Structure formats: C-alpha cells, structure tokens
Length: 193
Image 1 (spheres, rainbow, N blue to C red):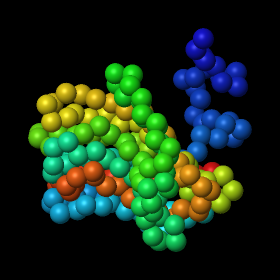
Image 2: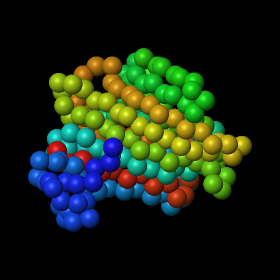
Image 3: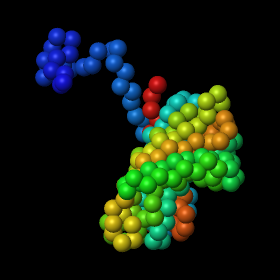
Image 4: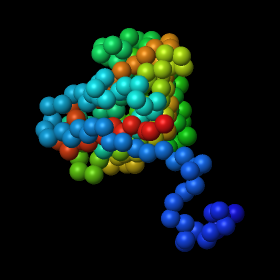
C-alpha cells in the first residue's frame, strides 16, 4: 500500500517532514583517492572516529594493482591497528548463496578476489557501528559488488565484529595482496544521532 497523503496533505504539497520523523543526516568527514599504486592501507583514525557519532557510513570504489586481491578491514585501539589472529569475527554470503563464517580472524573480509583490468575492482558500502562504545562493542555491516580477473560479476553481503568489547578509534582498509591502484576512492561519513 503506497502512502499518498502525509498529515492530510497530498505528497505533492509536502515541503517538509514532520519533526517526529528523524531521518538522520550524513556528514562527510574525509575522503581518500589514490593517485598511484603505492598505497597499501587507507586509514581513518581518531581524528575522524570519535564519540561525536555512534555510527559511520563508509563508501568506496576499489581498484587493485594485483589480480585476485580481497578487500579487508581492521580496527584500531588507542591508535594501534589490531592484527591478532583471534581479534575479529565475520560472516559473508556470496552471490551463489555460499556462506563463510569465521569466529577467530585477523581481519574482516569484504569482497571476493577482484580483477585489476579496466572495469574490474569493487564498490562497497560499510556501516561502522558503535566503535567508541565500550559497553556494546564495535560491529560492521556491508555489501560489496565487483568483478574478478575473468571479468565475472560477484557480490557479497556481510557483517563483522570484535571478539571482545573494546573501544575502537580507527578503521583500516587493506588488500590481501598488493596495493590499491590509482583511482581508488574511500569516503567516510558520520551519521548524525
């Protein structure tokens, strides 16, 4: 059933939503675009990840310098990115319905292996939930779509977390092998409360 009126007005005459409907806003905090193939990590640190926001949206278009590279994520605690082999847990569902569940990992995986030719790589959206909340911990949810080295399309939906309740003050994007190629863009937004 479609909504055709709002507060007894036709939708064509509505100029603003009622104050009771909180739609939130995105505040662009930073954007990184690579200009060559020498970048191995794209980080957003405590300059941007603060208690000002409970949730962040991160969008990206990734081009890899190496065929088969997989996009991965890590978080930082007090400025140090955590690399421990049991720090993270994540799950993924791929386009063929296959699933992956990792309870003890050294990162959160986001994409399948990407190609590095023209029109290959991946695009993604990732929500970074509660990174500075020491009561409920840090979570991510994401969706990604891309093309592999054969030019075949693939998609993934996933989620990740830390295995302990920690306060995180940064997020790092990196690849399983090689560097980001020129033209990769990753943008961080704060989601207003």
